[in-house]
Length: 409
Length: 106
Image (cartoon, rainbow over all chains, first blue to last red; front, top):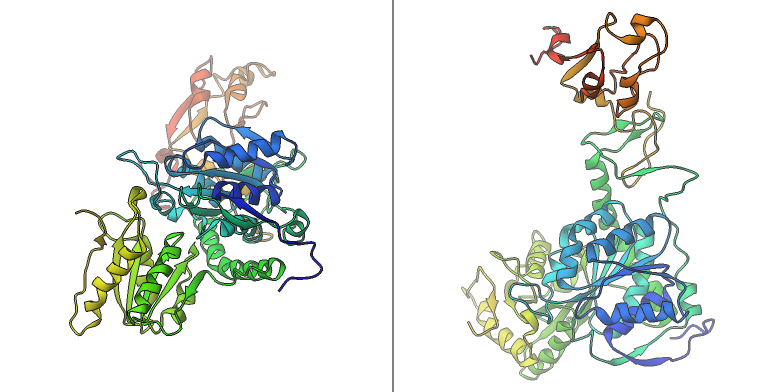
């Protein structure tokens, strides 16, 4: 259903994921971009610098000497009231780690495109999700895209979410699988994006006329400041960040619904559902892997198995309670992770287990580690893993403590 | 007195005295000025004031006698080192605590 008030007309462009991300930033009218090129993110920085150089985007493109500096520049730019964008991958994201905490702690609505890539050692430039999963606890919202349309749409929504709740947003998409693969993307007009996304209103601003200190030493306990105001201690500031992420779930859904009304592509949930209505077996996956899983479901449905896919779109805040209804009929949940918390299991598997606790869903959960360092994950392999898990449905079936790996070991 | 509570969502403050809290609580030793040695006190006219110039927290007054704001003095001891008359000595804070107040750390 297309809203007639909009000047939207189908503008389908063939774009790879990196150009979709760059275009999303441009349409969001970003004002400052500070980024450092890294494989496979480099084309994002190249596109944006071309937009700026060619006069198509009125923004400051700040070439920095490292990702740590990139995020430091984003912090300052956001604090003086500029809409700010950066992009990185893998080691670049790891190098940003410290500043990710600073941005979230200062509640700055910076948006970062993370082109998911494996992290060393050993050296590898291909895809998995270890990089962004390793930044899980920095206080950023994390959104994962399944295809290039979702990359573009998520970057635009990310600004609206971030600037509503004052929490930075990381839009993650799979390196090469999406970043370097071209597919049709419906590109909204600038006018329509402007209708959706109002200008950035900072919660705090550095201004020489009104001198402020940000992030000076904040002791554990609240204290009375020079103006006689009882100011938060460190712990209260950190509590507010957690509270903001908890509450952001509603904002994420509302923004997704609003986007759907304007652009006829709804993002009204924090996860995608495919054939879950009658599914007793649920495959859980995140990013492009979820698309592959739908092909596996086709195969397994032909064999008579009632299988569906739950694809996680938002990983932080984790949509705990929101998942319960979708998983209420599940007897077997097979979680595929392109990451691992070494010594434990895949990160999304732990989250699913945690979400189910105390909700009377007694499903067996199996976890498979797949696709690390760009190892291809075929739909057939996903289907095989589900078939291998079927004995867990039987009385006294195996309960496996550690994840299984789909690799040659 | 606490007038109103904080609406900040990040660590934020305005430049002003006491924004980092009562930093005098950090002090383990206290600068004590001997007026018999302190140059402005001895001469009875504005002079020297090197301690005022060097205090990194700007807590020393340019007055006669020279005064140190102990509410915020962290006890760094720079005033003692720069005093040309050796008029300032650093005294362990324990010396100033009574047995009853439970703060005697000496």
